[in-house]
Length: 121
Length: 278
Image (cartoon, rainbow over the protein chains, first blue to last red):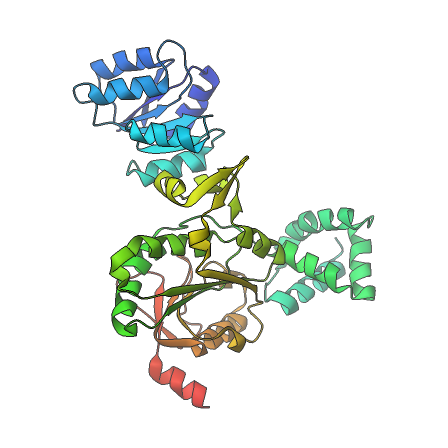
């Protein structure tokens, strides 16, 4: 079973994402900010990360840059999932090492489509 | 809705569009015609049908037919047809056409996502096109859909259905809350109104026809008429792409399946020449 780390400071979003990803046969781990997510990755590198941008402590883009520099951190497929919906944000995320990008609000169809795009389903 | 009213609507829609409405679709008719009645200031569906029967109001008839058509579409829908286009159809046509324009017809273009997806595939072929020009025609029965297709402006939801973010970055720009397709992609696509029951001869001839997920709504004799007339508009090898759940088998022998490419058919040149001569 593939693992997906859902990183979002909203408990509601994490719950919605968990439901969608479990339906897609992922084992889901949750983190409420980038710092917690980093510790999670140090213990066990997930196959995929669904990543919010704006979070306290360590935001999504800072987390992603740190992840990609860390040992084994190039491996997870990272899909941003954020309210940042300008082209400049998308470009910044992709240049930082994201594999796909979801603009909130999202639904199961969009998550499935984007995960399929990067070979996760 | 009274059975006689449903019969009237289903006959009208079939005559005008080929679309078959079976009695279990009565709920769909009611839910889609309700907004038209409200917009026109008509109190009930009974009154709407009476109005249609008595006035022959063409605009109202078109609105009813438009409302009953299914416009579901998204970028790179089903993916496989676009891989077949890139890896099977275009290499063959580029070799055979020797620089002559390759003509593609999207016969149910809806709001434009299919022709624009094709244009993206072509754009990415780059030097493999070997100088061949590709012209795309998108037609649809719905003027409302065609307006959107021509504008090439999509919502955030629409650009996230099937479209990889790399393609979004390459071919779209954001305007307010919407996403607008690049003019460079629009340059090779024409859109025009076309009912699949109408005469296709004014459209010209094509090398490829995308006719996906539309004939499923037609009865077999109508499907056959449409497919046979499409075959007449094609140049050999003449590739037809249909939806994943569709087939020409048992409908017409104007096309035959292409081995190892699901949903892909090509014309039978001998049969098409014979039919044309007749």
